[in-house]
Length: 178
Image (cartoon, rainbow, N blue to C red; front, top):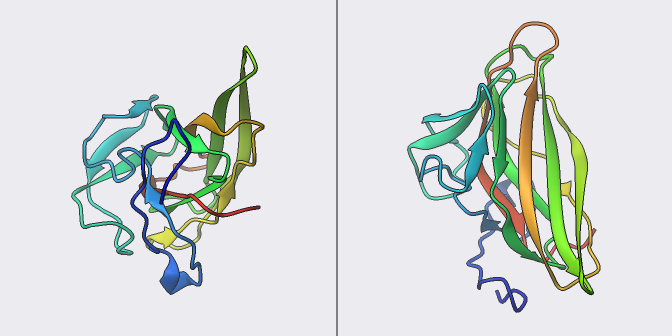
């Protein structure tokens, strides 16, 4: 699929088809965490660890993001077009089911001569099972220009006992319209 003038061409697949989502998706830069720290900034408690999502969303790998109960991770900004409005990922919480994972989008774009930035809390994930599962669709919305830079941010929160959040296979839908 072709992207806007600033974005590279994307290779897409339908990884969520077994869960009723026929959307096409491309893997966000290092969205499988196989290149360890490349393309991501980590806060306290976050690291790339051994293991991999078991849903078969992307090619088999050996790494995943581990956020524990209070870690944060933010992708380096990457190019998205005005048609690329949502993303999904594989998620697992092997800890306290009352802990949550907050998902954010930080979008920067140029409008005229002015750079604009917005940070949007997209929602919260809470899972009661300890197995890998597809996340909900997180829509970060439209922006008034053809291309923008997107950072995806994950923040684990554990109000009681610790969660053990894991994320893998971060995928962006290049065609979904919200």
